Length: 327
Length: 144
Figure 1 (tube, rainbow over the protein chains, first blue to last red):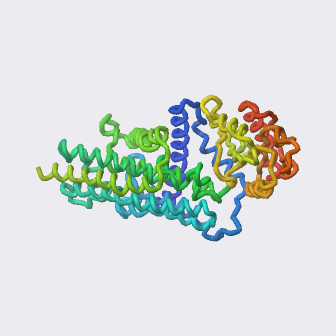
Figure 2: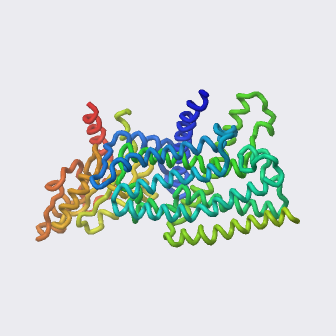
């Protein structure tokens, strides 16, 4: 009972801490890739501290209660994700109450809160940003669902328990179930999920909703001070959660059985460090490398990429896994 | 919340009030790998609502007056104004032109002046550092 009350708070704080830390690492590494020195790794914490000092302005034309509610909704939606996704190599807190399908639905809430924020601020920039966010949201949802369903479908052929549960996914890692064809298919699905993550987190090249240069901050154009900081932290938590989702689906391995550590605390520490390393690798590919290498797409290009290209590619992955199964 | 929160986290919004683009390019030059102000935590933001520092370039023509005032008021407190370039001080090359209302400090309160036509990126960075000191004092006053 205590864990149900205290757990979510601790998880949210930890998610915020590590999320901000990874944002700092992201900024530093991208700066190095561009030949700059870049800010220190603790820079996001400084930004948060500074934003808390600032005045929070609510524009006259804005729908005041919705304008203030949206950041809280966004932060809560992101924090709830951490209750269902296993992190630090441990079981998720609400493991028995929700599976990958729940996560699929919960992932929509932060984006939806951003859309609400955009429309309630009554700024033309924010409205355009909100519309773009909706289009992107609808575009990436299909390949995302397809990837998760494809993996669960394959695992469902060997597991007796619900294949959407993360514990089942961890018991039957997808890579050890499939032959060479299936490995190729799984690899394709992994690439699709990595690219969906980039869009889900609205990072370059899919950051059209915020687009500093053309929409002046897009959705968040009217937000300042404490309200802005909530979005900032929510973004950090969501980044952490999405990377954890990829790890839970594709790399549910722990290090402690391999190196032979059995005592509870050392095993936890080793698993947690290994987990943080995995997060860094996932983020390096789907956030940092792509961000440093690419420019922003146009909105119709984003739709085409996700709706047509990504869906077809994930379909190819699904077919490869199916062929592997029947042959 | 420490008063040093502004130390090394400063977001800057740039408005072009009739500038010839010389100063604007120098401001952008501070973002390039050679100067890289992001290593000090200085970021150029797209919205005045996110900003701590308003960087104004140009001599302020008549059409720009109301806009400049409005952008100034949109920035949440505590804030400082950084005036970049000679035109904003006394007109520069546009001196005594028929459509000028400036200098900038006649329209909004300016905290830090960076002279030059255009000023070097080093000078702009130094101006931002001065703005920092001022902001921390402003934050201190706001709390006490």
